[in-house]
Image (cartoon, rainbow, N blue to C red):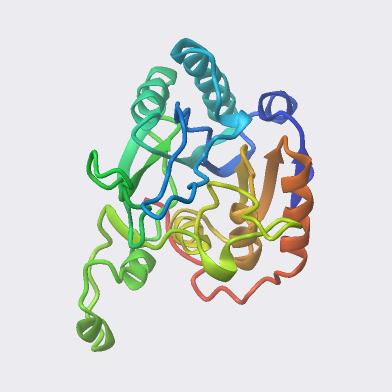
Length: 275
């Protein structure tokens, strides 16, 4: 199986070609099935370009459930016995995904709240500001001896330690609420017209944390919904192998360019132990 590749194709078709028990870590950022209607208008009258892409549209909840069952089943087959999987989602999809994961046989380790430091406001003031997304961390079954770098997680934990205490060497267990800003500024990939390339690009620091605490150097990481290739960018930087699948050719082209500008950094935290 080729590694360090971007595959331009349908995720289900491509995963069905791959070997069983071959992947150390999976990160999936699937369609959220947002079901947005109408236009989102800011208070100043300008339109907010939220997620209204064709890849996020399904005719019915049953169609979405069928799609979710198919790609999660493929991931379960491909994951090594002691590998683990992360899935991110919003309130529209994460409960459906979590239920189906457990039906298939996945065992949930943690659910993590990604608290967004700079969330998109609720422009109409009709409900609470949507300021978080949920990540599910799971293994193939309850007996899996999954990778977890506990001490590294403590070292990386700046969420629950005051800045002054952290500078003085105080470290605490990493919790299940993580604070990262929404991808913006120079990190946000732009297309040839200067517009954001992808509506749901995730911050690279989020992926780096996931990869560091739940994989080893030279492990192979699969992302079945590659998008802007953030998973690959983090994997390459941290000395891991990657396999990315993405059906949008434009995303693949921009992703290749992004990866060409990244070099592997010396990872002093490459070691670690199994659970």
